Amino acid sequence: MNNNKIKVGVSNKEGQLGFVFTKGGLREGSGRKSIGVTKKVSLTLTEGIWGKIEQQCKDNELSRSEVIRNILESFYSN
Image (cartoon, rainbow, N blue to C red; front, side, top):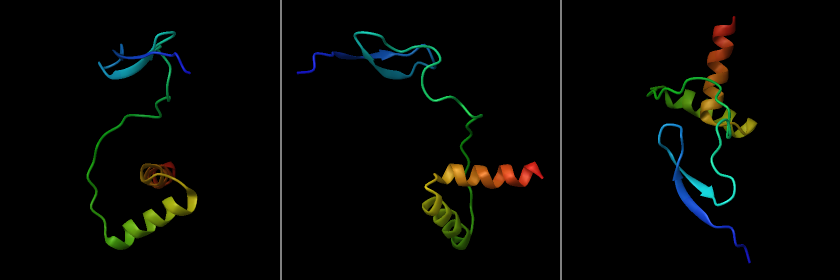
């Protein structure tokens, strides 16, 4: 039997809700580290280009964001 109790608490960061164990809890600096600034965009491409992006995602086990980020970083690094 697992006696760990869980409660919902508000993080110090941006007022986000999180699960807090009775021992420990939310800590500054914990979690996934940021790689940059997140901005939501809408992108219109042909079905052929979307198909190529989706195939690259599948072939390399990457998210759509990772594939598009790699394409943009490659373009701007030249």
